[in-house]
Length: 325
Image 1 (tube, one colour):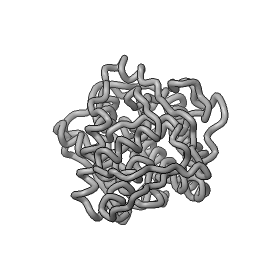
Image 2 (cartoon, helix red, strand yellow; image 1 turned 30 degrees about the vertical axis):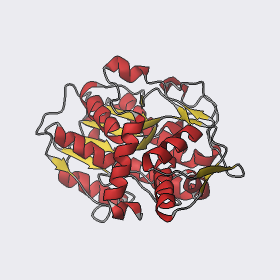
Image 3 (cartoon, helix red, strand yellow; image 1 turned 45 degrees about the horizontal axis):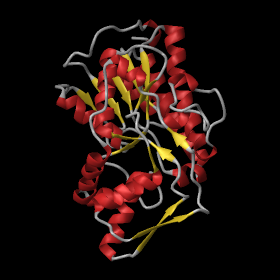
């Protein structure tokens, strides 16, 4: 079936629907798989990077021709922390843009009923009005440290929007705030702030290190969403939302990086001193999402931050291979 024959889909996914989760081994993708299975969806199509390189157009086109998934969750991405985003801009832009275009276009060409694109809150302007609503997209300049990643994600959500507009597809997008939880990346140089803090404080506790140095001055405000809550929203939106405007995914709550650091130290059980290296970048001063749209649709988060950090730390301790990435 050619994608140009797509019509706006209606109703929820049937339990027998063939569902492809791109990026199922990552933190977000694996959470979506857990949530789908929890809700009784078991006809899942999964491929590792070894089996399907999403940056290869010919491979992606062949996969969609052979499998014809009815629904697609596009959670695959090249991700990293502030240093990775700032020092490998070309890689982040190319790999993310090429893989998402390959998947979205092949889904379209092969008659996918519905696709959900996973973005990031970094798509919004650096100094956007707070909390950031979906409508503030492209109203001013992006944060330079993750501009390349943001531009790639904006391209993906805009391609979904333009397909809806031009061909009547039902492709939606969701923009999560900062995420954490099971199967996170704890690499010492390429991880995001919360998993990086978990690893740093755990290693400091184990080695008896008296001082832990953190980047910046601790003043930026951040919001954090437990990844299983995001997965619950993703399945909810696939079954209950159609529209070209993205939907923000968050808690509507924020805290300073200093407060987060102290909370992680508490959960891990680190009792030493915390110092701040103000020669290192802070990143965006504030990133709080306006989650009123998701609430109006009938969804709210469930996991409070301290509880989520405890579960994430348990995952870190019980999955040593993940801790070494």
